[in-house]
Image (cartoon, rainbow, N blue to C red):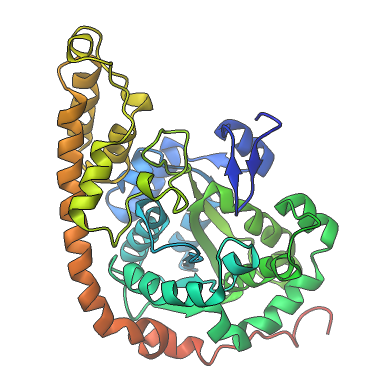
Length: 387
């Protein structure tokens, strides 16, 4: 990876070398053999797995063994609101998590860190974050989580239950390690330096192995967790890591709220989203004639990548699209129009589901089976080795 590359949970700049990240992070490729083992339990594979959008892991094999042995596991994910409502790239780990919950019928914990981006100076005000939190929660619920097996919590509201465990974790992470892992510097707020301890806490909610689907840029938190957890008598967390999900300006970009014209937001009017798709970067030739003669390059095309990530469930149809593009039988405008229609349909349905999500929101936060249990949860620090 080039020296100028910046790669932290809060900022990614430069070209990402995914192979090098595997070595640096101590992670492993998701192999066909591992997917075959997973399929024994699930019956099928989500396209995010079969197409290796989630391309790396740690201890997924141990999660499957625990499940086969009757020990079970639990899921954890989250999102920190900052500048805007959720966009399509944000939902990728949630789609993966929801599928795993549905297949394995396991508890799922969803953290809404309503302080993280403010502490990271990525949100203009705490009030702005607050205005986005409720919308974010509804967007997550609309993706189809089980209301009795899912607990969604806001850090500042749930802090009484998090703080003791965070103190135990924080004591075991010195500043030199945190600086090396997270890239902290002289301008980093002291709140952000403490924050990683909070994000580790949900991995300790149960005395089972925790599986976390996330974008690989979020990995630093959980490498630290794996150092600490065994010392506390807990499992090292397992991970499913995805590539960075591209925006509409090129596959080497990361979809970001800071570039709204290149991101599809879940609250975008469908027609607005369609216009953004029509302006997306493709791998096509400058003219129709050249496209017919030379074909396009779907490998660098944002439109093709979004079919691959979420909007073409058929592997056969995706393969045919690829071949037609490379042979010049398919024009970029045709692909864009089809993707625009599929995204419009997705947004219309999602926005319809938001009304239903509003009615059941309290089940996920307060009144559902798991939520009720978690409002009585306390970290048992008195039985740790140090006491």
